[in-house]
Length: 466
Ligand code: ARG
Image (cartoon, rainbow, N blue to C red; front, side, top):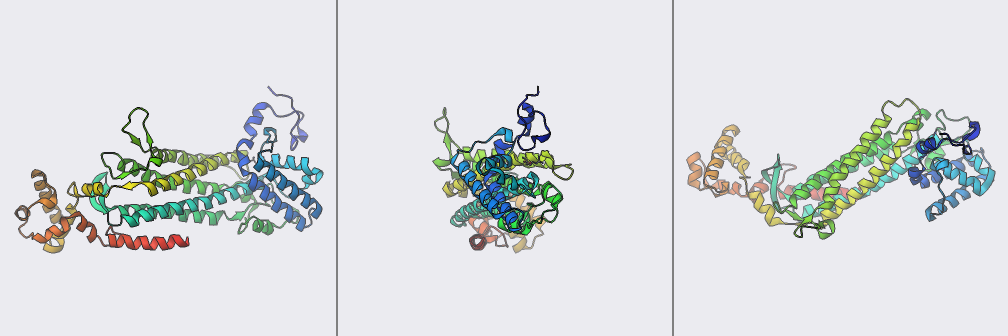
């Protein structure tokens, strides 16, 4: 099966014939790692400058190298660059073209460097840039949620546990729960950036180099805080990619919960919200339908992002130090998770900003299902001094009576309530109304509009500075 092709230009010295077609297919990464072209060229320019400054190559050669690399950058961006599978990956594609363009000086670029530290620095730069993109997108989503929360700080809706109406809350409070979640996602992004802000360049193949390189200089030139301290670790770990995938998976999981709620809220049965036409689709057969496809796709794409995390964890598990070609499998999962997450965040921000909130439907639902039963029990404890367990029991009887009379709890007459506990006074009605229930929950972090507004103000200030 081996086809006799010319041997590889870069490492073909000891091979009599070219790699078999299957080998070429399994080995090549250019179809996906071409995405790293800008980082690869940036890294090479920084490396060449350092080589010239430390006297390892001449200034004249460095100039040629930098000029050639910039030409390649333009070619790739113009779409005129010819990528070759035979040249395996982005690193060798760029280097081969550099040789075409500037001749033998191109061969000096790879001094004191290996593809092992080269790919590690390229991917770190890419993931770091993506983290900044995710941080911006998260801030956009948080701002959109804050705006909706502010508008609806006093809009009552049912709060659920077990998907059963539990206690009334406000829609603003509900939005703010997501603000908290996405803010933690944002802080995870920042933590990850902090940890990945070290340069692996200069670790060479794995052991460092005997050339008098300056790793601090290249680290600085590439915008890293400092160089990584261990050459073996530099070329062999991909925990920065795993951290990105972890934070992406957690964020996607958060997004999927909001997506699911949007789907439920927009059913005719709930009718809490209406998605804008821009974020829904019609059915080709049922003219009355308006489907929340964007929300469903956010929910569905979470599977893909979470899968990429497990995928790369499994690639890295049990890898002996240092580099192994297994690690070439790190890129597609990172790229796809990034592209997917960016899209999910954009779609969610659009849906949140554009949706119409049906406050009347929320209010109606908030009042149903004896949602203020806990308020009644709390009143019995507070006013009559009943132990909570007994108050719970009394309330249960009141709920049963309301069911029997087919009315809401707040519609029971004072006589009805007194038949259960004679100590009850008309003051009880002040807590049975949904709006009053919500207003009374002024504990820190509670759903009272006054509390919700405090949190909105605090987050607006934080996000403006973030
Ligand atoms: N394409 C390779 C990767 O993505 C680059 C590093 C190759 N290094 C090597 N020793 N074969 O991992």
